[in-house]
Amino acid sequence: MPLLQDLLEQNIAQFGEYPLFYYSGKAYSNLDAQKYANRIAGNLQKNGIRKGDRVLVCMPNCPEVLFSYQGIARTGAIIVPVMFLLHAEEIAYILRNSGAKAVITNAATMPKLRQAISGLPEKPVVFSADGITSDPLENDFTPVTGIREDNPAVILYTSGTTGSPKGVILTHRNLYSNAVNSAANTKEGQGREVTIGVLPLAHVYGLTVSNVCYIKGYSVVVFAKFEPEQVFAAIEKYRVRSFSVVPAMVYAMYHHPKAEAYDLSSLESLGSGSAPLPEALRRGFLDKFGVEVLEGYGLSEAAPVVSSYKEGMPYKPGSVGVPIPGVEIKIVNPNDLEVPAGEVGELVVRGDNITPGYYQNREETARVLKNGWLYTGDLAKVDEDGYLYIVDRKKDLIIRGGFNIYPRDIEELLARHPAVLETAVIGVPDERMGEEALAFIVKKPGDETSAQDLAAYCRKHLAKNKVPKKFVFLDDLPRNGVGKILKTQLRKQAADLQP
Image 1: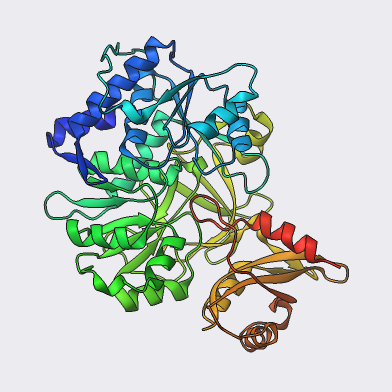
Image 2: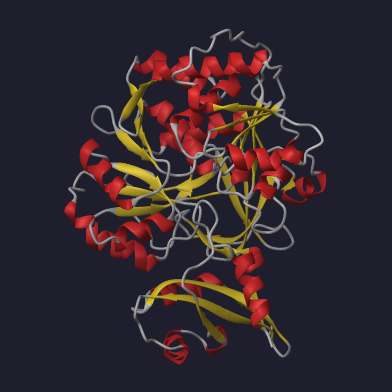
């Protein structure tokens, strides 16, 4: 199986020279990408970086991030992608845990990196990516032999929503196989397609989207951050047919007041992942734009895609599609026995995409990897047609008086209420019932709906035991860099509310 760096070489061999990236009005060809990747690889080698060393990359989305990934892979070193929005202390933790020997960043992020490095006993070499495409750097890269497909290519630190981040090891085989199998599920267009790269490239979802583009021969309009109007303008200019998003972006586009000022007629579908997509939002987006939002499912430990919709598959509300080629799934009960179709249990996954484990964390590795299967911690079910449904996170399950309550059921209902912009439901301790549901609500501006109104609405549609005991109104919900709601922060807020 080819290596991560082979994706770009194969792209050039198959498609010839073409504009691979558009960024801030400038085009970079695939041959440019190869040249800059080799420059970075040579510079790393000149500074002592060798096979197996860790190199941290931390800056906003830009072509230099992707050039850096390819350059690092060429040396046999391991890419450590980090969100530039993280606090300096969080970056310092990742630097210490990974033992990174080098850092690639840019001028805007450099002060934060300097702060993160200041307390480290051994300081990594720091490179600025700002001059990669203009400085006359020597291209003295020496090709590296002996890199195997089972060697680590990336250590991806989880968002830390449940404690200290864990370093997910992803091998060349993990990433290459997942990109190839994800690409096999995408529709073939007419001519060269242009897509939009707005997901964080430091997140495995964004990284895989870029890998798929190498395989499919797509061009990518790269954005440093998500601005709906800029995305609308790019759809209009490049006649974009499809791109990948997270639900927070769907929400922002749906509610944007200037959406109808742009010609979005080329857009056929969006692929949504990373967090649950409320059904009410999916329907609203389809009604407004005539565009399907097709939800998929993945996680960092699966490199990341597990399931998606294949071209021509009928849509089923609430489903995240079917497993992509090369990926097996099972739904198991607490005794590790597979359950029948329609029954809820824990989702376990197997395939070439599954991580070999967490970096320097044997205990956590043993907890999630058993007999070749990844235990995802997600509660799910599969219907008689093989469609997968994610019911909830196992750790988010609310057990009230011995009965299971799935927060997503309540969230889906509340999302349909005309007053509610966003919602998140958690379980809070209760002396009598063990746990009760608490709903955090972001209302539409100026709306006067009360907690009593929402409770009455829930009682009309839910069993009595599922109605949240309390409703808390917020201006916005806490999120991580890819728009996933941070329920750990909400639990801390809820603890402060407890009498």
